[in-house]
Length: 130
Image (cartoon, rainbow, N blue to C red):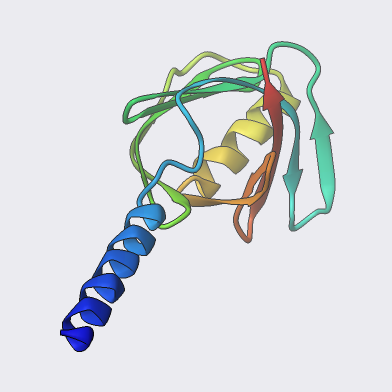
């Protein structure tokens, strides 16, 4: 009887632990971007107005001054995974075009590295709530 009780408790703890891995790392909402770091150059581009990203169910939208980048997203094991990345196609100033290219090249998956930093080996996005 004691073995069965211990086994049952172990299963409950394992189920709880695996469920935590599938929780959302970021809740749906709008988030102001403070800066975007290109890890290759080491330059953190500061928000000059209106930069933000939005999460709504399985959609991700990010805006850094010119075009909107849109992707399907899924949160699993502490990461955001992106699929079907698309963009509007307006002509942009050089700085915004460079940031959008960096985002397009970098948005395959992001981890929550700190409470307010999403990143991977190419990019870090520092953000706050709106």
